[in-house]
Image (cartoon, rainbow, N blue to C red; front, side):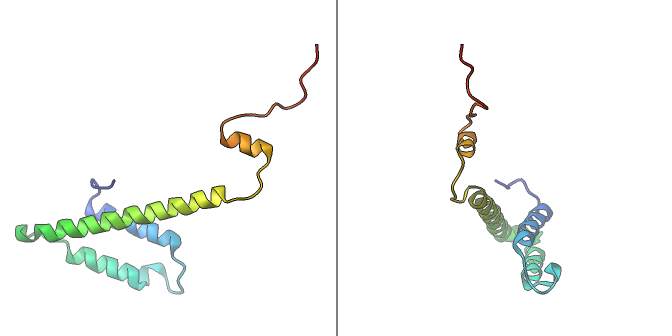
Length: 108
């Protein structure tokens, strides 16, 4: 999904997704989670060719986690949108792309 994201964009995307669900008592940027993510990204910002595999593994883990967070948020949005409740006939028809006529048909 996000294999084309640079390290900075991947970090921003992760932080954006985490911020949507964060409800802590301390500011988001001071939370342990944010500090840990920043430290991990700094630690894995390598230039040595022999450590390339570790950098790729860290990128893969970050991309996978970002994908997970995005999909959990989308899943919760869908659950909220379609949670079970009694739907009117008009709502049910609209869900499948139909329209109910406005009034009675005129007789000829």
